[in-house]
Image (cartoon, rainbow, N blue to C red; front, top):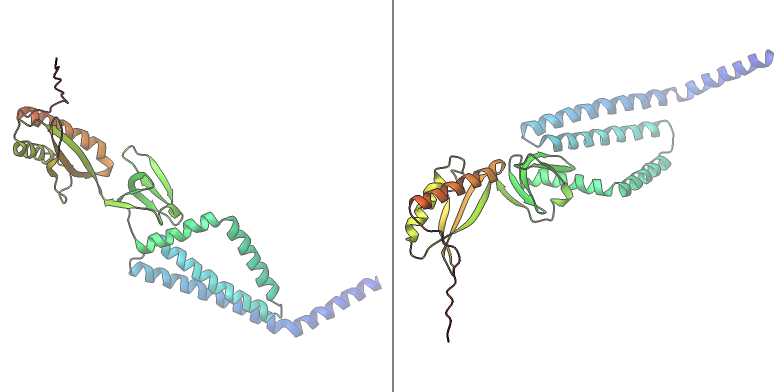
Length: 272
């Protein structure tokens, strides 16, 4: 019993001695941590307000603000550890080793995030634009830091990693997608009448672009027909539906105008 009491007294005196020697360091470290917490939170809030006032992308704004907040709080935490007299060199080395290992393990994801930041800053396209990249076509529905999603006319959702967007040939046709086709007419028909008939049939549709007017003209002189080239722009989400409707309108208009769409013909001469 007396030995246990001696242990308690010994622990009591050591605790008093520790508090007397290190109380100011502990209080100082706690104050530094609290200051770091409030400063990082304040900077985070102010950065979000600044980005919002200057119309920055929301995803990138939160990413940058969170990164700055973590850096500020981390720096203040390291200072607090140093205030307690603890060597921070092994701690920094351990953190560096962890980050190196994690970076090697998720280098693909890191590349996607870096590409996402580049896309948000450079803005080669925005939500609602129609883009073609890596043989994939669709309307941009969402831009994330790791990936971009495209929506097709068939309501298919295509997810494209952002690293595949950088360094590739990217076509942005904005809200519309171009329709290109060739219509053959007989050499006996009037080409100007045929061109005007086709153009009128296209312009009857209220779904085509009003900004980019249809282009119709002689594309080529084929063996059996005069080839009329046709180009017009339709919304991506209604591409095939509109194209088929206009094709039917052109076919009916050419029939009404008695313009012939010839089929390939060959003349064979037999010589004895």
